[in-house]
Image 1 (cartoon, rainbow, N blue to C red):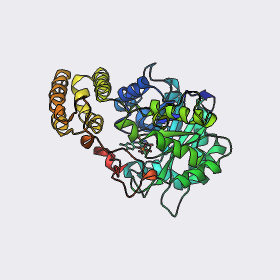
Image 2: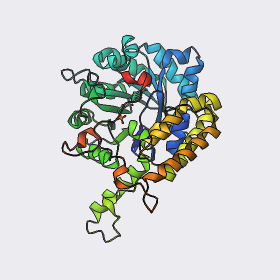
Image 3: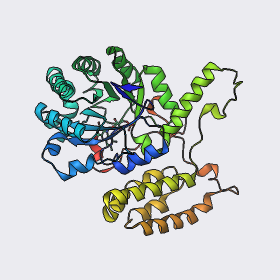
Length: 384
Ligand SMILES: Cc1cc2nc3c(=O)[nH]c(=O)nc-3n(C[C@H](O)[C@H](O)[C@H](O)COP(=O)(O)O)c2cc1C
């Protein structure tokens, strides 16, 4: 797949998650494989122009973190243009414009989802960015402000005319926040509205099967994964493999070339692999943010890994006090010892302690006991 002239290794994208999609997390995801393009947290265009350290930290990168999209927000065309030129000069592969953020602070200044309501103004702003830089410019939006204003198809068409290389669309309205179901039919309308550029679907993809369903039912060219990657940074690799296995099966329905088990679905990572990657994530946090801040920031990251450990309250109770790498080793050692009581003779979690399977809102079976809702992280995030 391509974003304008930019070739990508897969059609799977890491969505921006403010506070989470920093350099260490992006490197973790890339090391595990399968992702085509990662995006930074949203960055305030004006803060970049004002040379604020915080904004530069958000776009910090290194060669292994490539290709990288930087997401900008703002509503002043000259500022957005200048910020786009700055990130281009620093080696970003593409620049994404945030049009989906429902946070008041962002909408109040005409950025985020407020941009979806002002077609002419938004198109002019985007056109001026496209004209300023050589790298692809993309836009990320929700389906609209609310159910009565599903503006995404019209906006996508107008932005295609203005020269964007792709549209990312979260299949919910601003009013929906993170509740309710991701609207696949709504995403399909955006796909139908544009003529030549790829549309990337987004929302609630927590399993490879959910990615396939969104691709199949919306006709989108790729999918972007946010919270699902936080539970499961392996999701890109597993999804890519699953999609390949599914298309192989279509070409060879009798499975004569050696059918994979479990419908072509690669297994979930084992506990030891989860721990290995979680350790690597912490090491990178310390490398990038320093020991004290890295450990403090990791206090909110580690519990996401733990959500797939089985019983984990002993781990979470201790990790909120994390201060050093050595302490983390102790926490893990204590936790692994405590966790043994839930294992069988083979060292696997007994079935009754296994976490419920993840399931996307648009694949939910109301009669099942599957996990109902993907939590939204705390902090500034509760307003996303
Ligand atoms: C904690 C958090 C932070 C987010 N930050 C951003 C952001 O900076 N820019 C953006 O466009 N969307 C942001 N989003 C929205 C996600 O990119 C994505 O569209 C949404 O979470 C739905 O996808 P998911 O179900 O795969 O997480 C954020 C969402 C969450 C939960």
